[in-house]
Amino acid sequence: VLDVEIRHRRAARLLAEQVRYEASLLAHERTALDEARKGGQLMPVLEEVEPPPPPEPLPPRCGRKCTRRHRGACLLCDKEFDSHDGHTCEDGRRGSWLLISANINTDPEPDYDDDY
Image 1: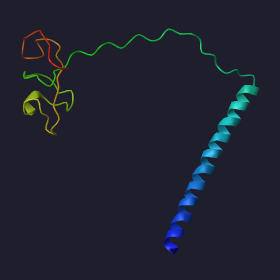
Image 2 (image 1 turned 180 degrees about the vertical axis):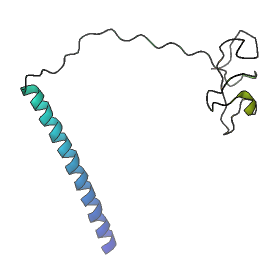
Image 3 (image 1 turned 60 degrees about the vertical axis):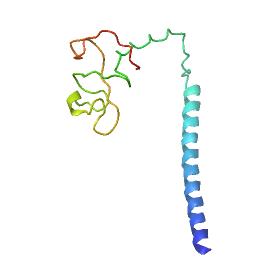
Image 4 (image 1 turned 180 degrees about the horizontal axis):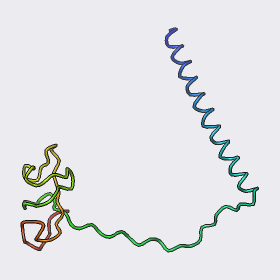
């Protein structure tokens, strides 16, 4: 019973210490916000800005049904195709390669209808 009470007191003490720390951070942030408001510094107003353009789409990668042989590094483990067991990396994950052009992949077929 005494051990349980000691653990509860220790846990309560740690919790109280964490609450005091968080409260001091909050007080500091409130003070900084009040100083910014009173010091003549206006809070920045966000103007309407055009959103950035969407990122460039990634090139297609070989999917789960791919049986091609590839050149270049695997996108998951960064090792060559020859160090894989088919499409399986050494750690057991299924490897994947970019399907960019016939000069990178040994299979010259241009249609990439694999599952991505």
